[in-house]
Image (cartoon, rainbow over the protein chains, first blue to last red):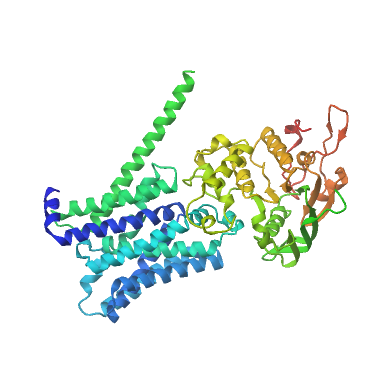
Length: 285
Length: 281
């Protein structure tokens, strides 16, 4: 750990990595809670995996992989959203199809691009130590988009997440905001890919929010908690993985998983203690 | 009702089917301003569907519906709706006041009424409305911590906070006990001084002492009248072999309002059986 902090002062690549982690945790805090309360984790997973098609195509044709990822994520989000709004059912089939087809297309593109086999691993599992400054700016822009959208339409997003039928009766354009929410999920996925890779994105998107949700009773509380936990987890994962030279993405995810488990256990114990205390107070009169 | 009474809901020969299954056939109904209409009928008789047509959540395949002189969709924000089952997960991390505030979505003009967080004025109105439905102390409770009766009051506040002209309730008392049911209907009777109210119920006996008119629906509209409901009518509505219970009140006036329990399973009714029925009136 101490080794990490001295290295942090010396090496700009570590500072960049730290900033990348913090930028990702903003997305994790703003959108993660919506994914958790709206129960669209599987949907977010589908979007994340279909992103490989965009990244593969981008490297094959010589574009920036992140812009390919963004295009693929938004298209996947709109497709899945459209299937749900149009047919009301079949959503999970569409998600499964996009999930696998996106991966297949991506792997074919990568296999046909000479010298990119190693990049495949960093697409899948992230490589926070190799985030160029240009991509930090790209991440900052995505954060800005997320922040402005959520700040402007907070009420509408909460209404659509809570009770679509009632929101529709209050003249909220529910379909539009549902699609917009999915697009924001797509943006968040792309934001996190650099840090943990597209396979692990889903854990960083949901675990900090779910952990925060065990300790707060409001969506705003979940957002703040998830942002802080996201920052803590990405920084902690980076610090822990540095000295033994192990991959950072999986370290962050394991930390997030362990924290979630601990939090679930202690939240459960707390609920039990409270119930026992309440019962004791009646029996005593 | 005066002769110049205006219709706030006009349903003309509306028919609706879910897929190949007809649910409503040729229903015509006029609700006038200030009415307290009870919509009764057996389960699967189309009551909730008729409400959804009025709310513009469904469109009739045939017929015409106008609400406040407009299409149901355009009239939406002037309606308050209390659903039969809350459509939200009970573990959603949200406090009662924020649930009630959602009833104010779509109100007002200008940027601050559309974007960002709620204004102080909206919060004040929501708090006041909670007090009106006698749920003021619940404002900071998580929605998952409420009992059935408390939740019903909160849903009523959510419907009222949007300053509706018509209040539409779908079985508002289906999940609560008789005493609370009475309290809720007393509240509705108070509200009826300012609002038109349409309430769906499967319990003719109970609501007839509160509403100004009853409409009976079993795929088609069987009656809509103010007079007391007699046995023939209930038979017509629920099918054969229905028992009637007379309620004798203190003033010796016989009230034939009470409901019945079908002996047969067909058509299925959910009227409560006579033995648990001593409280009304």
